[in-house]
Image (tube, rainbow, N blue to C red):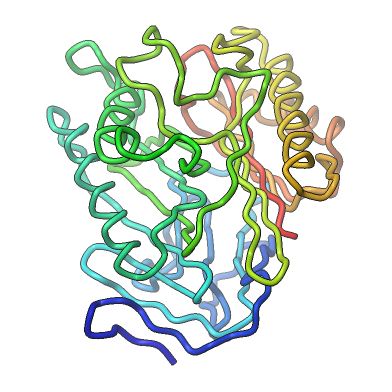
Amino acid sequence: MCGPAPDGRVQYAAMDAAAPFHLRADPQDTAPPSDGFTLARVRFGPQEGFPMEDPRNVRVPLQPLNEPLEERWVARHRVESGWTGAFAWAGLPEAMLVRITLEEIDEPRFATQVEHLYRALYAFLKSTGHPHPLRIWQYIERIHTPYQGLDRYQRFCAGRHRAVGAHMPPERLPAATVIGSREPGFTLYALAAPEPALQIENPRQVSAFRYPPEYGPVSPSFSRAVLKRWPGGGVHLYISGTASIVGHASRHPEDAEAQLEETLQNLEVLLERALEAGAPALRLDELSAFRLYVRHRHHAERLEARFRSLVGHAVPLAVLEGEICRRELLLEVEAAWYG
């Protein structure tokens, strides 16, 4: 059993050492989880029939463009969950899910909103004994909306950097995804742990945190991937949203299929680097889950077919309509492996 200690830290019963949870991708289920072992349910699309009062429920505010799946993080031991202020959380000793939503973006203050949210996020995670985010997902309403010469993504990067990037060593940055949504507001959810993961970078690409100023006054604060060794032997690999970028330049600006092939090449290089860092030898078709974010819905069917011809027909794949951080990029792919 767990509960808040006098210092605010969440306390847990002891559990044996192992990978704390695994991912299961299933057709969407309207029934609430009742087993007590669900760390997170990640739903794509509309909220109908998906109660957000349950802190374990995460809704990605993007329209699914293929058969909707639900990702469920299934823990080996019983999960505790609750609300602390605006933060919904579900946790185990080794891992914690946390989510927060801004219902409305304040255009002139958006960078400050992001800065305050990130400072609060890191303070909350520290208070629970899980100070190290491993993987963060963010969905921003109309990501290219301009204001005073910068779009929302660039202002998001500025706020995140003020809270985190300016004070954290680059090798401690989490894997991350930032995608534009048509729904109002800003959604963030994250996986965190007591100890950090190992950063994985791609030699084909300039690290995002070292981008030149032509992409914005502040570089994005994330790692290309992270390798997490859980106490006792389990290993997870979290790959950030990855696009058709070589060096720091976008490639194939008007060719969606060529962008997909370039992106998959970047993913293969990340798997090679993860192997050098101690992960098992993995092929793309052995990964546990993929998300393919597509800017234009009319590209979705063709890109899904091409993805499956290159990667395989059996891998769990969610195809989602979303805006990519650069206007010339037509798609982005993220992936994970739960060993």
